[in-house]
Length: 356
Image 1: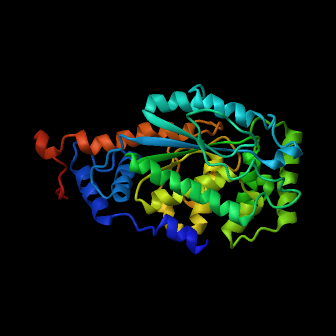
Image 2 (image 1 turned 180 degrees about the horizontal axis):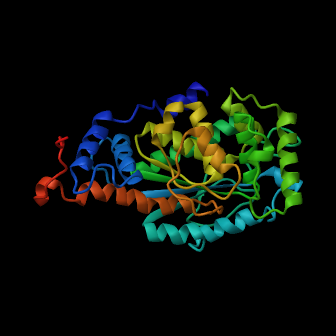
Image 3 (image 1 turned 90 degrees about the vertical axis):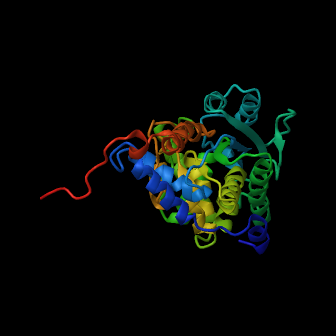
């Protein structure tokens, strides 16, 4: 990772342990048996450490939907044609996609970013940060240059800084790009050694024959480009995607800014893997929303040590699982803020020293 990127994104500090302890004391004083709300209590304590306060609240949240195209679509790795990327971006901007519906329910803003769509979209709501018109075909050479990968990371980081300046204090990762599960599988296999047979999934709905073909394409891309597993930027440039790079930048800047970042599905978790390999301390700021129906996602979460909150068999992407997890984050924040303590409610607590 170049000094330019490190300097722009900033150092990542560990979570605030005193805030975690204060949150835990508060949780243990509430009118319930200690730990009885399970993962919600763990989440409440984690959020306290991330935000540096025992009672965090996230009233201004944004889903960053990074959109980009992939040259590897030339190899027939998707059930949908590449032009669907542009069509879906317009759908996001008009508020008609699944992520829009779920974001409205969760009171989250959707920020749609063109970081590498293969075409020009005219819409006042689109955030235009195009690095190039889609990646190159990674079975014919690198998907992009190292410099383009670095620029895309910084696009994500700068978007977080801009959003924070208007009050956003929690981010959800989202993406759109026909072919991006292929790039994510390639990133996963190149960085972890997990075989393409295990990392590829059905994406937009491939049949068995095309699924096998997709695995072969990922294997060919890795054999041709020889990405260096000890150099995450090399892997990202050779077999990754522009939206994956942009989301890695979002994640890193959230960590440097001490704000939580909710990781959506397989593509977002591939971006999380890049971020974690560039700056392992960024993992403390990542919240895994769900495990998707994509074959490689559970393996990838396990590789990162992230425990998902939901398992709904979803595999849409866009940020949909991430937005659904906002309801659980709200619950984790409201419990310590609004529940009565044993003392305030005049309820007898558990005996600390029961007679033997």
